[in-house]
Amino acid sequence: MAAPWSRFHLRLHRLLLRRPQLLPQHATLLLAVSGGQDSMALVGLLRDLQRLHHWRLLLWHGDHGWRPESAQQASALADWAAAAGLTLERQRWDTPQPDEAAASRRAPGATNGWKPGPWPWAAATWSAATPPATAPKPCC
Image 1 (cartoon, rainbow, N blue to C red):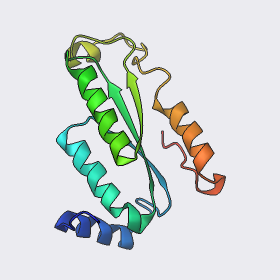
Image 2 (cartoon, helix red, strand yellow):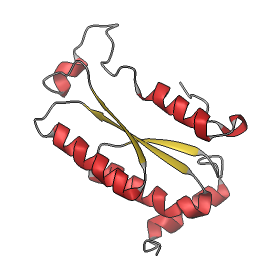
Image 3 (cartoon, helix red, strand yellow):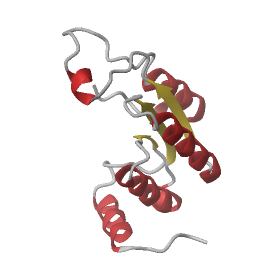
Image 4 (cartoon, rainbow, N blue to C red):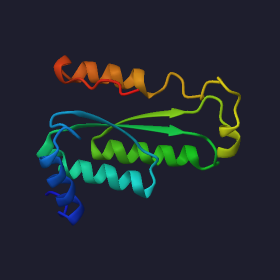
């Protein structure tokens, strides 16, 4: 059974019908998720509309390691994604900082610690599952 239809579902669905280039039908969508309320609400909304727009949803979670419970939260997110039938790539920052302020003070030109980053994984997943004519192109 489909999830209850909310005004948010209707609003996004109507917007995508008017402007389909925003999230094209049959596209592969890579969503960076924290496991917090906002990202989970977005995933839920897109999952509910997936049957109408035929998207493939891929999730990526970066565990920054700033809090002692971050690994447990990442595991809980992975369990949820598996139960929901969603692909989730998890990565832990290879040079964790003690907090967000310390991370923002790193030396100019230093790597951000996300190696190899979500993009090689996503590119491999896209190329295996998406015909080249519709494969997403990097934006940046």
